Image (tube, rainbow, N blue to C red; front, side):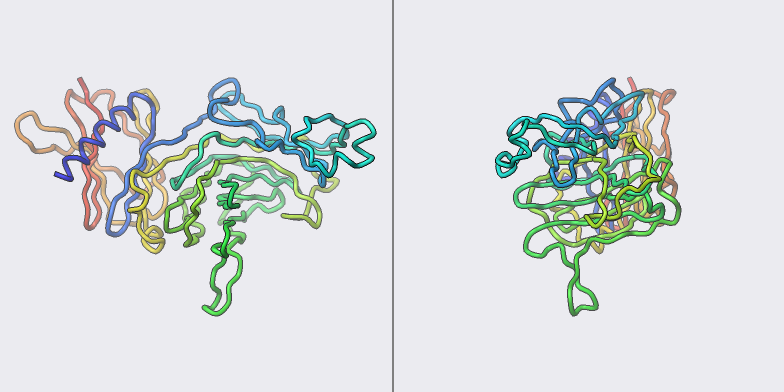
Length: 383
């Protein structure tokens, strides 16, 4: 009875999924299978940023007096399926609404003189209006090359200060990027040699340059911890729970000498500069509390089904692709209750596209199997 209920649920969900151009996610790991649905999918195809999905700035204003930097909404643009977050240097005095300015600064002589603030740098950001609690988060982007550039893709929960940094890059570092977490009660610490602890945040090395071409960064956040991926490869893990719902953010900042992520720009750094994004996607699992411990999630194969609206579905595979897991496409028989095999997905590749334009009439399912579990999911119905 439990299995029939699951099939009915997935049938309803996936019917919606294909007609509404939504996406599906499947996590396969030792001992189980978890299924989820799209929570955010922005391909940036419109002429401007989707105002129902994003703020094109930081909700608190984005004015930094110390660095004389302003996160300006005009530095966030969208064109031909690409979102561009830019940085630039300027020298201007600007007026800002009072809520952006710290009360202590309002009493200074510099501000009283004409109530304008010196701005030397412009940065950019998008901030999701939706909050998330657990899920799988991904962006495909081109990282810029140049000293001091500081692009990032991350999750932030404001109170308490909980944060998951899926990717923080520096323009002068082409074969590494930074992953980190921030949370209270020292949950961001990891044991070293089983004796003393240190902060989890660190630079992870990549086999090839990550600057100047399309790279995909992902993070899987479960109640057991976080996994960090680059181009489908598992790069780092951290076992800790985060209790706060978080907003999803992409931004492009500039570091400062002797500040966080030093060094800052030098005379050779070019401006303006662009951090380009092809898409941002987020999925949420139907029952995140059923996801396994980190040691099992390390062995997970992540399968994403993404329809393109032309009778095609692209399956993308992340994580452990050297597995015994299997996914079949099967057709419902008209003569009996048996399901007839149609195709088997190749789970060892990066992606595979299924074109069902000329499939015969009938109902088709995905059968997902690992060593101990099997799930049957509605795929499509051809009338």
